[in-house]
Image 1 (tube, rainbow, N blue to C red):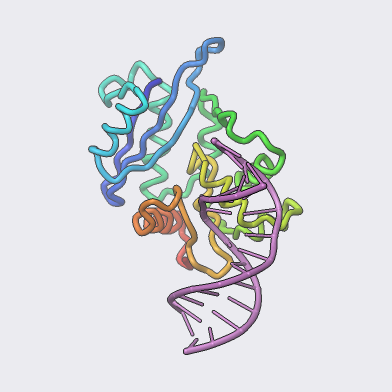
Image 2 (image 1 turned 90 degrees about the vertical axis):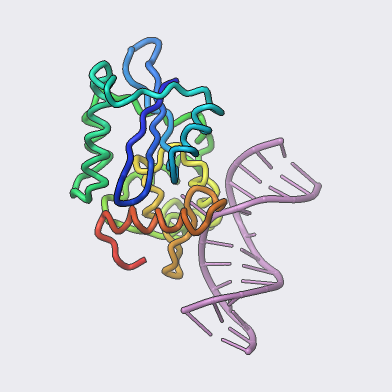
Length: 191
DNA sequence: AGGTCATCTCACC
DNA sequence: GGTGAGATGACCT
């Protein structure tokens, strides 16, 4: 599996995208998106997961990946784009892992994917929408989101108006800051 | 079966 | 407006 990263200077953030090539269609299959504070974290993650890093200069061999980086650049510069639409227009296959197997988690993901840029909702609103009371279990599903941004889980916040969790809760302050920054990029000032 | 969890509500202060 | 306990349902081992 290969990986590329995009570095946002303003946000002190590195976005690592993992992908490989489908054995049948030869297209780029997007596997994973992950956020890091610095390059040290990135390299140890690359080691742990045996990922091959593609450097910038090699991009011309990876057309659709280069396009993806452009889209991320636009997004992180605050441009008003619909990420999901843009990515769908590329020659890229989005793998939803086999992670979401149950009907419940699939409904959650489907609902979250309908959120547009700058549109926020709450865990309990999603529960209402899919006819469940398990607002807490929704956080459980989103915690394992392999494709943040594409599955825009940062747009789901707490009903109280607080920001809510992001990427697990191991480094709560940094994670919540990132979630807030992403929303601010999209013009959300409330949280 | 029992533990975990990116929540919510309500009762305090 | 902050905190803590209890309810809670889906998921994982």
